[in-house]
Amino acid sequence: MKLSKEALLQLLLSAAMVLSVVGCGIYSFTGSGIGGIESISIEPFDNQTAEFGIREDLTDTILDWMLKDRTLTITDRSSADAVLFGTILLIDDKPLSYDEQETVSEFEIRISVSFVLNLPDKSEPIWQGQITGTGSYQYSTGGADERDQGINKAMERIAEDLMNKLTSDW
Image (cartoon, rainbow, N blue to C red):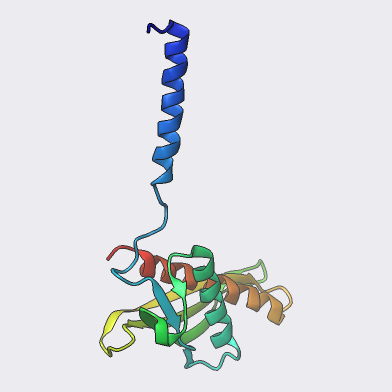
């Protein structure tokens, strides 16, 4: 059976479309993560600062990032492949910019957190490290809402950096 040029072209185009769809189906954008770890438990963080509520807020921010990323499954400690511990070490505000009257117009807040990732039945860590997140905020009225915006930015950066470390191929 002999095909016309149009029929042959149509057949080749159809085959190319099928191959491109099938080829896209096997590629994944998710990271491979730490070898063999698919689920994680997050213990309540320790807080060595005087900042009230930061422990809960940071834990929630990290949980939100993990739930959005979906590379690691969040589970309870008894069924987790690994357990994450964290300690909030430092919260520091420093002037970032000044106005014409040499009054502070913008602050930078810095939050430092140490993390330890353990297997549930081991005391030796799989990974440990420190992450510092920063966030700036305008200081126009000196209100707590402005500072909270800076804290939220710093916590988002910590969560993003932590996710990158936990899901990168070591």
